[in-house]
Amino acid sequence: MSDSPEVLDKWLAQLNQLGNLAEDVVPEVAKTFEVETLKQIAASTDPDGKAWAPRKDGKRPLQNAGKALKVTTNGTVVIATLDGHIARHHHGRVKGKITRQILPKKGELTHTMGKAIGKVVDRRFSKIMNGGERG
Image (cartoon, rainbow, N blue to C red; front, side):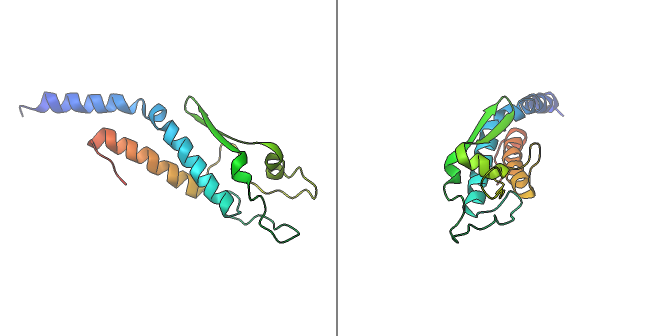
């Protein structure tokens, strides 16, 4: 086959690009993590979808928690933090000792979050290997 060296060269170039996959996707993974966490906050649930304990006055708890969320990256690591009193609620260090978990435990991802992040990685992988995007 006359085009075999060209095909091989193309595959080798694609494989070399895969070596940068983690670095290439981390900004979009961070954004996806932020969007999914904001959805979860809006639903008043913990990362696993369990409803937060209600407030005594019946109002929705932590209505402004999304403003306390900061998502950054360091290399290929996504870092999510909570500021102020929202962080204390997350850890249950508030009056009444009620924990309203916002972030997943360190090193853990829920199925929903893993699926959303997997789509980001899959799209980038497909773009490299197939020259196009997958939805």
